[in-house]
Image 1 (cartoon, helix red, strand yellow):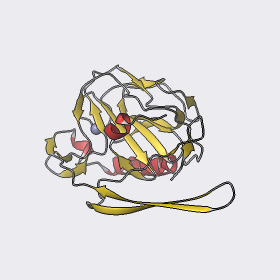
Image 2: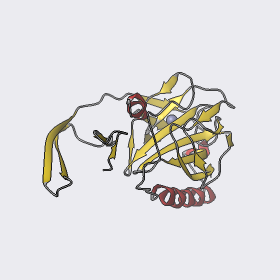
Image 3: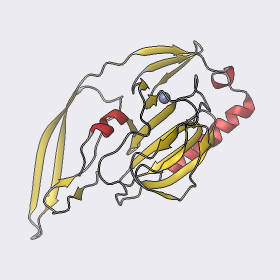
Length: 228
Ligand SMILES: [Zn+2]
């Protein structure tokens, strides 16, 4: 976990999260630090992970997304490698600053954690947040960061992945247009593309995901934090 201090250097803060697979219970949190004179200080706290309630839906998508042909399976496998490469980026320096802001001003059409059954045969857990927006709606970066992936993928459609540093990534999917390039530095709120319905989508909407240290977190929680 990474920490940063506020402008006065009095308060240190960091972001941590837990995945959907974590069992409810009490987990120990231990922090160790050294003072300027080398004296070690430790801090312990028990963190309670509660039980979440998630709903289930059924959805219909074109057959290729539940029964891909050999060529499409190859594409899916290539995408997996591309994503693994993008997700392996871990900039220890913090690129994000201040609170995270919603990518669009719109209603949420599906929350994090929903169990979905596509075409009655493929099970998938919704690891992001859906916004009900028509195609062509400008999509803003949740915070500042660097583009580590900006290209069409089979399931995700036109996809942008931003690295915010300290193991925190945000993903923007099903876009109709990508307006940034890999390696480009993005400021908070900057337009990364236009929404759409590309990839495995039941129709135009924006899917946003938050990845932290290899697990997906609920974007609504990150968006609700007041950060210095
Ligand atoms: Zn979604």
